[in-house]
Image: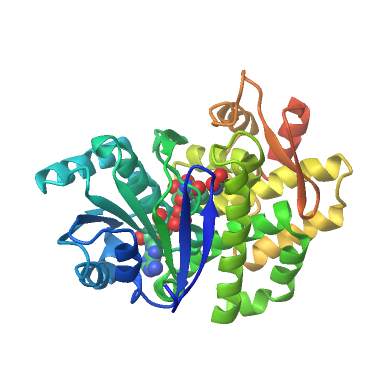
Length: 364
Ligand code: NAD
Ligand code: GLY
C-alpha cells in the first residue's frame, strides 16, 4: 500500500504491518492484500464504538469480504469476561462463520483483547485484524498479540498470544474519544518514555500542551513512536519470557488496584497509580532522585491521571499481587526503573519495599 505509512512487527514466527492512516479509506485494500476477497468478516465492537464507526467500516469491508456482520457487546471492562466470549461464539455459529472467516476487533483494548481471544479459539483459530480506536489501544494493546479476558477481579488471567494479520490505526478516530479515555492512554505513552527512551520522555514533557490540546502532528508522532518501541520489544520476546516484561511497568500494582476497585477506575488510570508506586522503589533504592518521581507525578497529573487511590488497604493490594501472571514460584516479579529510559527486571524485592511502594499511593 503506497498511500499510507506502515511499520512491520516481525516476531520471527510471523510478521504483520501496522498501518497509520487518517481515515478508514484504505482498510479494504489492507484486507485485500491478506487475500480476504470473498471471505466472511465478523466485526466485534462495543456499543459506543459500534454506533459511531461500524457502518462505515462495514461498507468499506464489503468491497472485499462476501459478507460482513457486526457483533456488539456492552462497552466497558466489566464485559471483558468468558460470558461475553461465549456470546461471540454463539453469534459466529448462528451466522455460519467457519475456519476461513476473519474476525476484526474494532474499539479499545477491551474489544481488541476479546476479539483476539475469540479469534484464537473459535474453530481452533481464525484470522484476526485489529482496528484500535482508543489512544491506549493505538499505542499498546492492538500490537503484540496479547489477547484474553478477566476472571472475577483478576486481570487478563485467561488468554493467549495470538498475533493479528494487520493493525489499522486511524488517528482521526480519536476525535470522538472521551477526554478521560485519552488521558488513560497517556499513562501507557508515558510508560514507554520511562522504560525505553529518555528522549521520548523529554519529548512528552516538552510538548505536553500540544499533546493535551490534541494537536494531530504531535499525536501522530507519539502513536508511531510507541508502536515502533513496542514492535522492537515484541519482536525480541513475543511470548513475554523476558524483555517484554518491561512493558508491564507499573502494571503489577496497577492491575491489583484495578481489580480491587471493581473496575471503577480505567486501566490507564490504574497504570498511572502503579507507575507512581513502583517508581517509589527506584527512589528508595537511590536509582533515581526524588525530583524525578515528583516530575513523573506532575506529568501524570497534567494529563488528569491519578497518582494515588482511596478506599484500599495496602495489605489487600499486596495479597492481590500474587494473582498477577508475572508471579512465578510464588515470587513477585517487578520492573524497576534504574534511570529514566532504562529498567531492571527483578524478583529480588523485599515485602517491606513493596508495602512502602503501595503505601506511597494509598490515601487515608
Ligand atoms: P476500552 O476498550 O474499554 O475503551 C474505553 C472506552 O472508550 C469505551 O467505553 C469505548 O466504548 C470508548 N471508545 C473507544 N474508542 C472510542 C472512540 N474512538 N470514540 C468514542 N468512544 C470510544 O478501554 P481501553 O482503555 O482502550 O483498553 C483497556 C483494556 O486494554 C484493558 O482491558 C487492558 O487490560 C487492555 N490492555 C491490553 C493490552 C495488550 O497488550 N493486549 C495492553 C494494554 C491494555
Ligand atoms: N501491554 C503489555 C504487553 O503487551 O506486553
